[in-house]
Length: 615
Image (cartoon, rainbow, N blue to C red; front, side):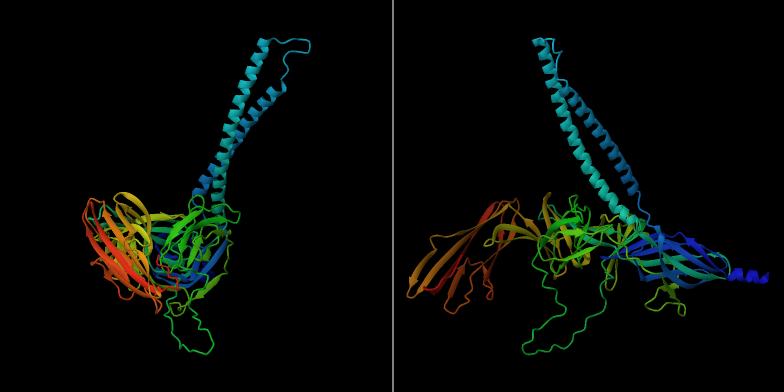
């Protein structure tokens, strides 16, 4: 009997654990999930099975922390083929909507059949009276009037009902597409984390399990509002968070980090560069020739393998925080910053697709995803802690965070920064983007206008912000609002900014610019064996605004690239000429409802048997 008791003490028991996700740190690509649980631990060895874990987990990232009088013996990661992901209530609503649409379609088709039967009945009963019975003109007119009126009414009703059928059919396609997308996700298995513990007495343990999932991320977005050029710029900083990890994040504490665990943390090595005769120098780190870095905006459409649009798909410039989502027709538009080379498109139920940016128009065709199921992996403990390439286990450390009466709490780290969102958030496993306001700043800015009338006779308003480094901005699209009007989108890119961050706020048509040739000074003449051309332009800048403005005007003199071409130029005295580029810069302060004029003149001398284009 004592032997039986001893075996029972050390028998390995398996116990399912219901854990809750209470914290998520979202990186620009991927997310770290933190789960907590307080399971009852029996005497002896117990295998605690943490269920409903994302199948898109990085096994190497799993860490288990425990507090209590027990020992963690091992941690294993398994795929559960028999338990599939739990989808949100959205699928039930879609099924209900699908049934309602089917009922409505059946009823509408029945109405069509009734009208067509009545039409057939009227058309087949054209005879009035019998063969030996005459018909009076009055009866014939009454029957004809009835048939004409009723058939016209039937045709009108049929047009209306057929239009309704078309509308119901379009709505059915949308619901079926969304339902198919969610159903694809429901067919994926879940994962489990098996934690083997040993206890000398029954107790309740405190556990914290953390791991990294791949299919999640966020990208930055801004609203820039300028009431007038005499007031600060309001910067509304927003994060667009999305995830298709296989888990719903319900009422969790959310943190946003600008880090990316997928990027290599190893510093590159520089090797000797040896030159050889006749050999082409190849840079192994250079991007492929299929990338065009001169594209500033890309647009296109995202469809599935049947050609149907994929709405709400996430389109992100790889390695940046630039992103957007597709509309109901699958269309997207995304402005790009310097260094954007690839686009990554993802949506729940479909394989992620990556394409090089080599055209301003890039279309995507997504394929339904096929789950790549992984085998069971068991990690063994070594001296109380796993080695670097294993799952980590350490003692649970309690920490208390003070309540902060702010929407976000900023934390700076040596290589990254983190925004802690104080208010709990729910982000479902459906791939839809949730916009979260991080913070709003009113920043002082110096406003000035800029124009290059040789290229475009338009004034562009710019804002120079000096105290921008404390804002911890990321590259992102910005919506521009000036004097209450929406101007469009621009790129806020602090990557290459120096002490001053310059924002282009778009065109301002209240500042008018003209650049016209002064005919009285423009002429061609011959001098010996040379042509001599005199060219003159007048630039007019008019300020129709109610306040004075500061504007920078740029133009240029041509530069001789041949020894027998000579160029001499002159400008309005206030223009500054760059000796290397021959670019002229005027800085003007123009009062309200006032105009200033500038002059640009130059002479080009070249051999008369040559052709030089001066326009």
